[in-house]
Length: 60
Image (cartoon, rainbow, N blue to C red; front, top):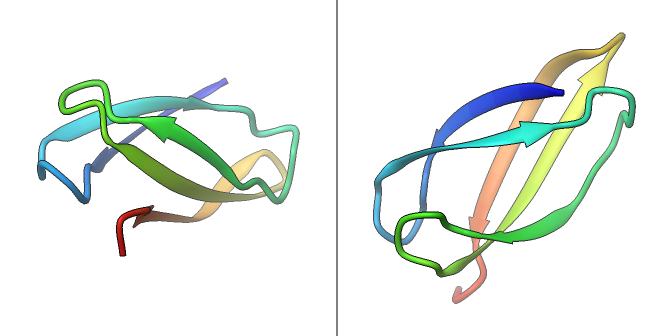
């Protein structure tokens, strides 16, 4: 597992998530640990290294 820090698109607080680098392309929804609003996460891995990470506000 890889810990990745990013900013919540709802409350702008820095939060972290544990990501599984064994899966190259991922899409999933998690609630922010600070404000509890849902966010959509798009981590991408190549050779177990995080190469891109996008987070979207589901209210848009």
